[in-house]
Length: 228
Image (tube, rainbow, N blue to C red):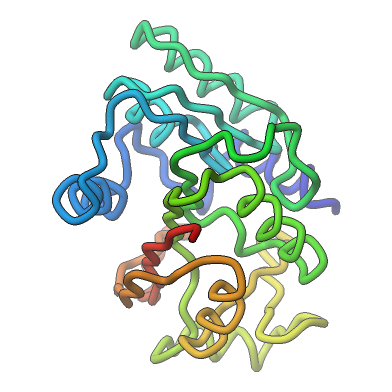
């Protein structure tokens, strides 16, 4: 099943994605970092939300006074995101687009890009496009926030890599969703992303993923980065 169809089915009947309407706490902490450490005023920014889902983060950022563009592959997710934006009386531009393909955005046009668990299912070719495109559309000095899957110390990730390996490095097949996912060691993440961005902080977080009535302990990377 193609990736687009997989996510369309997931948003119609959520099994893995977060169902809440509020923003990620990790993102809220990052915004505090931008204010205090980078002296960035969160208002009046141009922000790109990669894999914007049902708009939880994009709508929150728009409420704070920024212009936000959300890129999302699922029509169902976009419909829900737009509906929530209308309820909040805010304006967010939602685009039906694949973050692993070329972006229909001008270069050097965004102050901030966020990727909250959206690039895990890209293959290596798509990831290369995603990295170069994010770099292209960010302004010099622009910021990049990423939350992604961590391999280090994650027993579930290592079991999945052993029991259901994908064709590419450190990938496994999520058979329940028919989706290939990528996990990153610290060395791997640093090697890939530092080619394009300065990594300011790379934090490992532990949380629980809820899937089909069960909780699974998972590790995640929280990355604060900057285009220089």
